[in-house]
Length: 96
Image 1 (cartoon, rainbow, N blue to C red):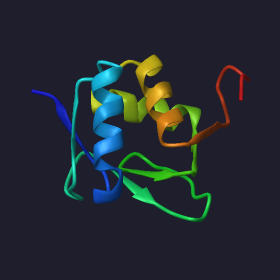
Image 2: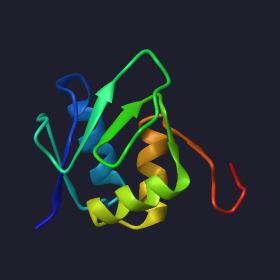
Image 3: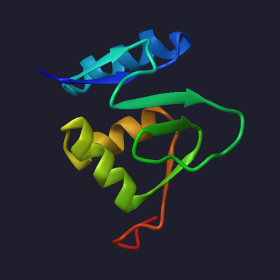
């Protein structure tokens, strides 16, 4: 059984299509009671283990932890972050 990613109704179709195109095995649903939820914001907010702010930023260690929570590879997590326009900061490898 795949993990649920909650997204706003306005993003549901595009994120679901992205997940299908990239073969990311998560259920994309319009809900806020999921393992991880996406929130639209005009501000560049820091994401955490349960909340991904579209157009925000996330620390590298946190992104790896969220990937584990969603049961996806870090490579697929990176693609998902790109889809949501989330920037990676504080990279453990010094790449970002």
